[in-house]
Length: 405
Ligand SMILES: Cc1cc2nc3c(=O)[nH]c(=O)nc-3n(C[C@H](O)[C@H](O)[C@H](O)COP(=O)(O)OP(=O)(O)OC[C@H]3O[C@@H](n4cnc5c(N)ncnc54)[C@H](O)[C@@H]3O)c2cc1C
Image (cartoon, rainbow, N blue to C red):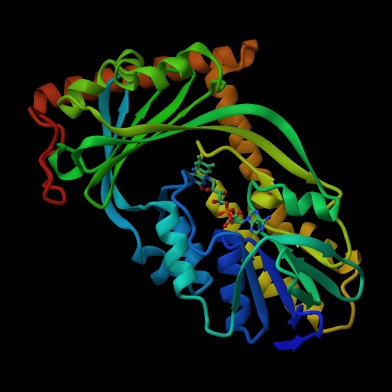
């Protein structure tokens, strides 16, 4: 990396790759590239990633992806391990799954990844004022006059739109108001509940995907995914009186939790499904949510982001840098990568499928809902009868937590 001072007070930094956006995609990409010996400048408008409601639970498949990037220990360092999850349907406990999951505050994981950036990464805090991209060299100018010249710009700005618009890339909403994600903390410590974590599914007729409760450190955290709009009366009622709205929506929850209250406010995030248009350009590549967004309910966002990072940094960028120039024809190889395209397509399919199963009024979906409700209700009744006979839901001891009475 070269830094040149100019008489007008501006500084020019030369590097191979500029990554704009130090969230999950950008920080992971900068780490992988720098460890491979690339000279990388990472730019973000915040020196510390602020508390924001995003993905809050990893499963083993996510950790496997982090491990492939050599980031598993760092990512799990900021998480709370979870060893069992109780599954509720129609208010009844239908299964208790054992297996490792990890609860976390998104900002903690990102700040942990940032703290572990290789020393060779030049982390720049600032606002990008101008971008000039082309088939040869790229140039980024910050609001304070610093200019960074590179061979490639990786845009990892998530939901932010400024940079993409500066480059001339559009965000197309393929489904506006697809779903709502709600996040909140319960007022009692996680250890005071009779379960370690739970998933409580909607009836199929209540526009609910599911509610999940899980620990993040000592706090019992809740993520609720529903197919509603930000301005509908139900959403307003949640903002006004969340305890009442939840009790009405899921009457069995109070019994399972032995009463519950809320700590702090409910975070409500409308989710749009989006994709990029006009992204096949010289010198610039989009990754993670900057490229497309899917629905949080099926939990496919982190997989999509980490798959992008792996394919881009381990396969495509090394090939691109091996020869001069950075024309769009090179960059197309990433957008056409079969692993990336199939991961994105599966995430979009799962997002649409979950929504259709919950609320699509078409006769095929309505029939599927009825069939699912009958099968699941039947399974719940059989389970309940079995429990009545056995006298216990789960005889085996589990991670020090008592079985549900
Ligand atoms: C409410 C919610 C719940 C979710 N739940 C789940 C879930 O349960 N499971 C799952 O798999 N996925 C979930 N997701 C999706 C997942 O969180 C995202 O796919 C992932 O965080 C995207 O990472 P990213 O790096 O692309 O973007 P981000 O992590 O958002 O990073 C973008 C970065 O770019 C920076 N930036 C933006 N604009 C600029 C600019 N102009 N200049 C400089 N820097 C800039 C920002 O400061 C930020 O640091 C959820 C998403 C939301 C919104």
